[in-house]
Image 1 (cartoon, rainbow, N blue to C red):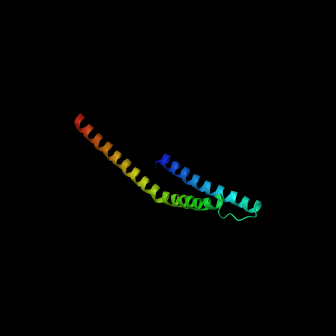
Image 2: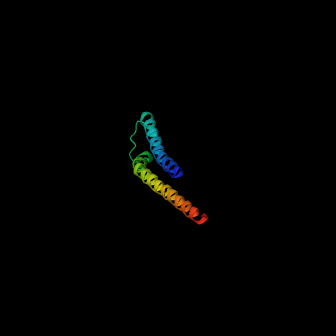
Image 3: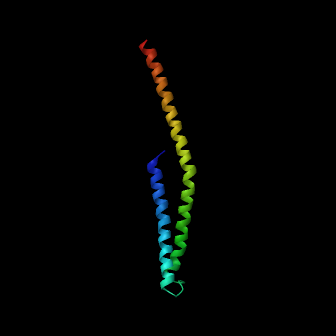
Length: 98
């Protein structure tokens, strides 16, 4: 399996989820420290973006499962093909040396 691809995928998904979590931590502190409503403020506008990033991170984490399985199957097919080609090459080499 292409581990560099999977690592990059998890880093991106983790970054999206991390940004959303940081937003909600800031919002919890704002809720305790500020008694005013957040309507019309920057936190109100960022709420939509935080939800979108959290949704994208969740979809990415769910999508990596079938994607990684398909990558593994592709790599297995390539390995089997290499083994078949090497056995065929050895067969022709033995015929040629005889």
